[in-house]
Length: 279
Image 1 (spheres, rainbow, N blue to C red):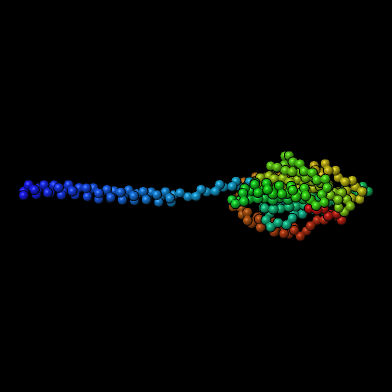
Image 2 (image 1 turned 45 degrees about the vertical axis):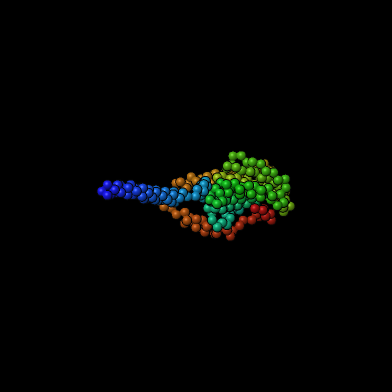
């Protein structure tokens, strides 16, 4: 009896060991699973959708004053006896996005007749937009549209188009003839793109009362010269932006420009003759 008691105690002790190991094992597995779950949850929170690539910032944030974008000397040479030497500004709701100006004049040469000239310049600026693309890309699309529009001018004859080298990032010269008021008009339109801005300049002329019709070469030369100055004026807006005072409020300037534009919108020039050149 005394021998069997110690033996029985040893058997019970050995039998209890596996039970403890199993309990410890369960506890260990539970802790491991908890860490894995926490890790999985953490990694899921950290992962996010890839961000869309940002579009290229627009090069120009403003436009020049259309009526001062072409030099006074050039205006005097191309539009002699202009009715309004400072030009007539076109209406615009936002002059930092769109603006235009035009000049016209009739140079009376006495018995030799009269020479009529008309010129206008227009600017359109495009901002970069995440959904629409960069300003340069949007301007390129509009540039193509404006070239097509010039080539499809109503009543145009002998239409021709060719690249205009040295004007902006890209430019096209469109020439054609147009008959109206019993006179033959010679037209030249230069459409140019510089960065995110499209510049469209049209120059035309005709001879009245027996005066000779201007040569296409002279009209083309004048249009290209004026277009170069207009594109250069756009470049100056980028330079001047860097030198502006930080405290200056662009919003106030824009409102002032809009008010000035409204004041000029009501006054349109028309040639002394009955000719009404198409813009």
